[in-house]
Image 1 (cartoon, rainbow, N blue to C red):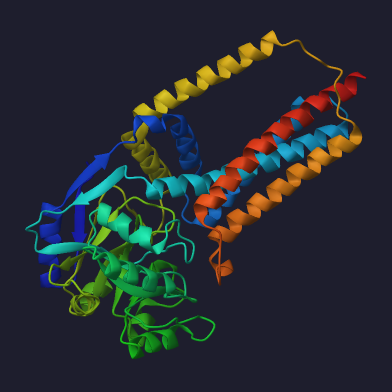
Image 2 (cartoon, rainbow, N blue to C red; image 1 turned 60 degrees about the horizontal axis):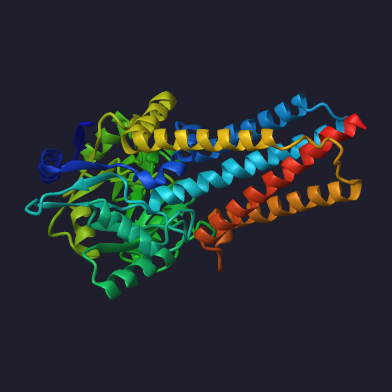
Length: 447
């Protein structure tokens, strides 16, 4: 198992970090066998999507894959050019819809499933684990605020801050949920202020928007509301570390997901004895690679804030799983592959055998049916099929964007399970229609 490292800035924090690295255990749960038919698809999407320093780069491999499939269809077909171009374009769009929606579907499954890594903290431990930077469906996360709280409890965290982008709505929902259910969790209401520099604002009462406040003003407003301010992934900051300290931040994220801050950041935090946090960010990666260590007595939002301000906190993380700010793409990619192997090697093998048998059965059934090359679609029906395919693509893609884009979530937005069901239906129907269109194209040349 990967070894645990820790970092702190005060003597109390160092004691907590050292104890946590010694006492915390890690458990791996594998994918259930019944998931085998879906496991190869999880591997495909994860392998395509792993290793990138930022989620915005995911569009590049997906677009390249769609273009490659479209080009191969255009190249392999032997019909008149406009049929080839039409069918190839639809193949490319279908491929883009399949992998794009698949990314959302797989991330949602990874989020709600109970397999993977969980922290195990002894009952007599003088500390608890916290994740103080999360996104839910109220911004661009994959879980509802309620599901986010349950996920953290299942993975060994006792304290969670809900910090959706520029809104405290998700935190308020999670706080009420915990109060109503009496769950053994402490929820902090907060937000991620996404201005030129991103800030995690904890224990605030109302939204602090970049539309109304610049960075120093946002820090001041959060303090006015009685909140605590943490610089999120400061290596992406548009302001210097010294400016942020001067403006009043209480601490910095040392680890964000699988990215570790550099020596300069850590040295500054040690020199000023600032709070240091290890946060998941929790938007599309659902592996608990890091945690913030807090004293066991920090069991209310007010006490959590006190512990952070006094530096009675530490960060633990998997030494082999994090990269410095200069992201190591290959290391991240192999890390994702390693996780896939640990959680689903057997299920994936069974799934590949299953789909190989399905393919063989399909081909054998096809051979028993006589070829009917004289069954072209009439032009009007061909056009109707194309338009219907494009309409399904547009509707399902719009739902996917609507459900995930934080800027579109000012009011009601479609639940992710519904969106995924629409996507699965659209993919199935669109590929069936494409198959019929491709067969019609083959007959055109032969007339």
